[in-house]
Length: 214
Image (cartoon, rainbow, N blue to C red; front, side):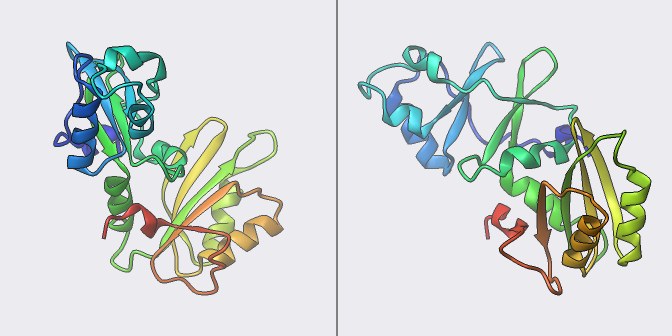
């Protein structure tokens, strides 16, 4: 699924002429820790509450802080799964989305991604996301999928983001699937688990429910 289909248009953007005080108030009003700075539709960067709170004066404009903006963004034609490694950062609750020309299109929020993954697949919604550093010379995707299916798992979606392959797996035995993959020499860089799982070591997995604003 493309990011374009999950864009949030409700959150505002900031302007270079906005004061630090106004920007902080806007962030707090909308309950986010960062917002995009946009001029004439062009994305200039993401400014965070940390940037703003360390400003010399609340009357400073954002143009004085541009050197501290984060230039990170994703493009609307990328797959939603590509956002998971970035949302792994606890401080990040949204990503600025642009088109290929760098024009701002909207936001992708952590809450939106979590709800999408929890509500995909069949009705029991059990499973998880596996991120594997993939080397074509060493790993076989067909072997990985076979191992998953042997443990009654079903690969709902797959996405390749060099050098990683990300698999969304539907299963009630996520922990056993991870253990079996590792027994076969498959290195698991990260795993996100959701739903009711059997024999899952919660210390090893990031529960996807932390993406959801309940």
